[in-house]
Image 1 (spheres, rainbow, N blue to C red):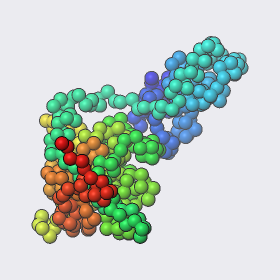
Image 2 (image 1 turned 60 degrees about the horizontal axis):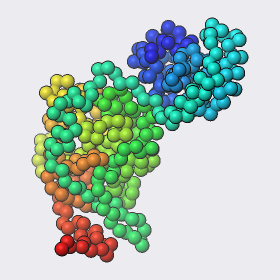
Image 3 (image 1 turned 180 degrees about the horizontal axis):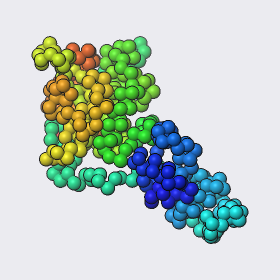
Length: 402
């Protein structure tokens, strides 16, 4: 539905909203208060008006509620689907009758009590469902990538288990190493991340825009701090919800947060990864053993119209060579070394579904990034009978089959 169909919106405001890319009611619905405030400051439209129009749009999610009914309901104090779900049909009908006495040009017909009851029933069914943004017509669907969809990218590299062994139970009585499958650092439907995504308007009409918004948020929000300073241990990977609440982190913490936000904002898992590998300690100096060190960052499989596959990997960094001001379409490709050609060979990658590496290994207690001087051998080691070791610690044995 066009934004111009909302009752009471003037043409001058319609033009201002169109300049902000908002032409449909569905595009106004999911905007957070934070985003509405930004639009208000930029356009000069009052926040109260924007909020009211959004309320009209929310009510029009109910089957049978047109712009006139949405306006009338809002005027009698029903400002949302959630509010409508808690109303009484007869009482609502009586209030609409009173409203019509002085507003017959807007509300030419009073809905029946039965019709209002159907509205209330529908509202009760969808009150907890968030409004979704309407995808743009030129947005690519996954099936358009043909042979280069999820199956291709999930199987392009060798999948191997990667175990992180840098966390531990605290206290003198414990001091016990905790082994973690790296995939568990990322999960879908994280309510804390969902809240951040909604409040900071990180979910955009396209995956490229969403990925960039996630990178920009982390660049602006997270403060870099060595693990020894923040958690009193050489390497302590943080879960995304921890980074959000601490507000500080090391390189891999920001990378995990970017990936976690992107996945929860709707970017398909196969198109986002956390990556660890060598980078140039000084991009201005030629690669050498002394000028290479470890770093953790996120990579994103971007829509690229000029690519034969339609997709190419780009780097989403937040602390080493961050480039949040560069559009996804303009970012240098990861396969070419990213910004300044500084990103070298990869050690491993992972998302919430798979982990990839040439070998199985565990990440021992060495920081990935120590001013980009850490070497691969200091960070990871081959897994040797890992399962047997864990079971032995638990005083359990593997039963042999007959």
